[in-house]
Amino acid sequence: MYICEDALKILKQTSQFFYLPIICLPNELLEAVVSAYLCIRAIDEIENHSKLDKFTKVKLLKMISLSFQTMNHITADELSIKLSEHQKLPELTIRISEWASLAPETIAPLIWSATAVMADRMAYWVNRSWQINTESDLDCYTFSVAGAVGLLLSDLWAWYDGTQTNRTHAIGFGRGLQAVKILRNRSEDLTRQVNLFPHNWNQENMHNYARRNLCLADFYIQAISSGSIKEFCQFSLALAHTTLNVVTLEQHKLNHIDVLN
Image (cartoon, rainbow, N blue to C red; front, top):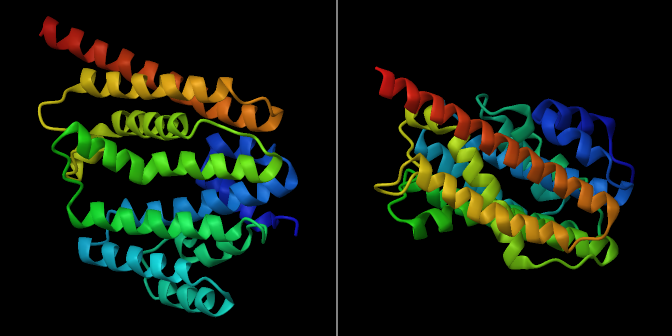
């Protein structure tokens, strides 16, 4: 199976940043990564949807989780019909069954399992209104939505060409990327009354958390020899470091303005 042009079009619309490094992957690995990426982004759209209430989000995420646990052509069609009934959902989410079908047969069940588990974990966090009180809560949240993605990618690398990676470092990679995202989206999250910072944490605490985990990402990449896989990971990490530096600089400017005022 060669990945359909329509999926690549949706991928490009979804993420200009990751489109290029993803399409540079070899064909079979490309199919697996695109399938996983679009499935994860599809459920992420539900978690972050501004016009869906908490009850609806939890219901949809749990429905997707159960459907992916019994994924076949029948449940896929049923899921598509049920999702299409929710007009507020984006095309990316409604077509999640199609993205699931893109995965090569020998690795598809692993991608479906990871998506099912992640959807269920997202439902948990939506249901508790993303209440994060401690660093342990933050670790749990960042594992649920990103650290687990690092584990999935490690499984995809091993499946494709036997590339072995440190799975603890993989989790740190995911956590680091998510921490950068939390910092970048801080203002937007607060406007929707979502606070992903533990109690008594400030920007510096979250910066340190991000950098500590991105150090694990550095170790993760150092152990990879495969060219295309290494380049994909390097791109993601470089983007995270750049974004974190920009956010840090902007915060320093704001602090300086506060002092002057």
